[in-house]
Length: 199
Image (cartoon, rainbow, N blue to C red):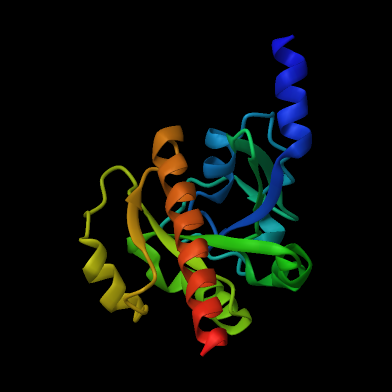
């Protein structure tokens, strides 16, 4: 009886597409994998000598794989809301896929690495240009200096209405908090647009 109820709830649930974006090696695949309630789909390939000079490994020298299409996961937030997570590829040579991945998306999380903040500029510019609500998740890597979110905001020149949070892409609870904050931000942006349209 319980499983029939949960199946019915999931049949009536609203599904929302969320993008996880950011630079190469920032933790997108890790985030999707840590929070997904299903085995995530990954399209990772081993880095080879052929990518030398193409993929910048500065700051992520120990990285051995790269996402060549996208990562996919799913998380049920409540009986009436399911989020489908799409991790975008981080390298410039795969950016041509972003338009397809962004089609129908409700919002995005842009992961940032304070050792290489410039790697998230492309994602920020892309979502600002599309008018897609997004938040910034500052992935706190072991052994790196932790910056206050407002310092990161100034460095990225991000509008004060865009939430910026410190996170650990390896930790499920940290990522659930990111997703909750994103959904709250999407609702706030939607309300603001509706109020503006009624004037």
